Length: 466
Image (cartoon, rainbow, N blue to C red; front, side, top):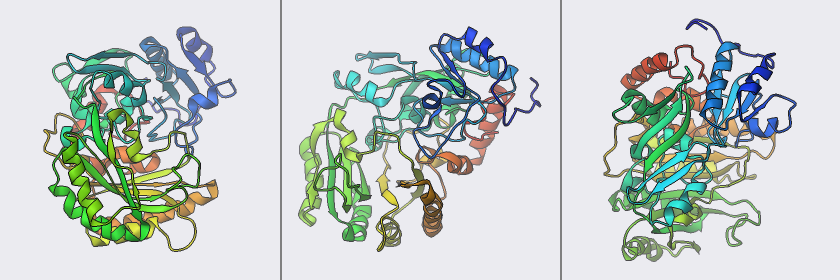
């Protein structure tokens, strides 16, 4: 296939699929096969994928075979780790699933871990915590390590230690020519730079990453909740308080609508709150004193802040662990004023009807750690990052939710930086906002590298870089 050959946009099941099956140890599934629907599914149930075939790879040789087959059939290649963070749906593509690549090696002396592409942070966290170490995972341990890392990786230790992408030592991947490549700061350095911030599904199929770990075994973390009607008051106070706190504290203000389900603590179930949430790494007394400032200001209705093992960090964000339909979006701010608080409160806590948004969270991510060496640039600079999650109860609710989110963006636009942290986007929005995540020179460099690494454009379901 020449660089000008067009990929087939809507292929049927290739007639030569048995040839691919003969070359793979892992599963090769086509529509109608048992297991196809599960293998093709996205974690976001709004996304419906119908790939021409799914290759559940057992090892890198299966991936190379899938790539060679896709090239011979003029089919695009999509990649799925856990199904989080889908950009372009894998319709008509060869979907490579990496869930069986489950290698995990921890070196507690060097404070490093080698992690296969099939693992989630929940698989890694217990293995490193027993050595008093931690990775820079995000809000939910249920998220896949590789996709999170390649998108940057901002979690509850970000102000102290930076982004996960800054703590990668090596990345191994199978590129469009079927070769396994190892990228580090000294070997394939341009590719190593690009992968850390723009690499999810764009340059090849990542099979493993090697990362640095940090010495964190316990934290002072959790939530304080006040009635929803205090949303603007809490946000205004927090936005002036957070920048003065030590980098050991990563904090956020959250507007939360808790569903009326048994998994939610009784005191929160079916109710709406504004909350201060965060994680302090360091001396417990210092962390407690910081949060006591809020307890003495206005006694919270619910107090869930306390010392805990870092292995319990999921309790801070309380993210769902089961697939669900949702829309996720983001904005970035240099500062958060009264008007931003008012806009978010009005959008998250409607005065009539059930809320369409599950939560709106503004996180303070500004720290003093060295940040660089990777393609993650414009999308990481703002000190405040907003995440908004909406959950439609039925497909019929999607148009109204999309309209509400569009209105929210329009209202926030005069106050936002215009930069996008892509890990807090999904689907078409991720594609549409890719250019706002990178500086023009970074985009040019990424496009040049994309053409060099993937000249036939096989990996067309990641970010639109070229």
